[in-house]
Image 1 (cartoon, rainbow, N blue to C red):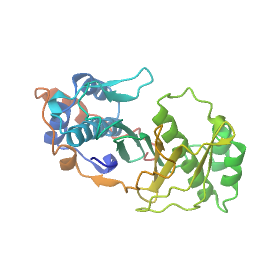
Image 2: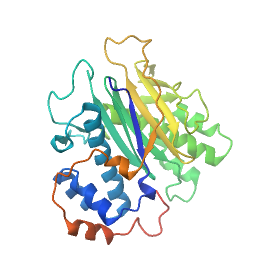
Image 3: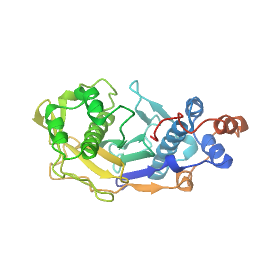
Length: 292
């Protein structure tokens, strides 16, 4: 039986060759290729391309299903899911599901055979506001009074910013899991971290989740750091009927290379030289902006 999958791809340092970008664009669905081609900057196209390849890879390799036959669609809220029916053995994959996210320099993916999952990644950065206090003022409604209290207990502005992004990553992972996009009142979900500092290569699981003011013990959150600036979090919902003493084992994110991304790929589309030419002419990111 497949266990948990946790993959990360550092698109921020990926400088695609013509051969790589052409291969990648042939191995995704036409509508995905078209959407990626519309991004103004390379970094956004690379982030999205990595997400499409990660999802196809996890379906192909976990379910032993031909890459070319995978059909991905999105819910009305934008959450991708598998359109192919009855390809997961219910004895081994009672609720096979996956989720991908990108921010900063990374695209990440989580997949589970049974537990509902959502994943998010966040890069610690000041987002161009004049000061960290001003940034916090603008974001006041995004966190609860308790969460702001935890943030302001940190003794430096940078540590406060780190804690802000940790909370934001937790919230986004929950939102990604339930698949409702921007329709949730963020004041209704609240996190109580017990471990103060996260570390690379260590998965922290002791943050408590409160929904509408009450502890909700059916959700678990696996937090870690990909590097000094990037937080990652996987939200996990215990399935109905599963005992409260059953937990998903912790899994550290595995960083993949481009050859890893396409190791089981099969081209769906013909070669398209103009697609590379259009990509190659783009700027990496907006001029004058900090790296994201």
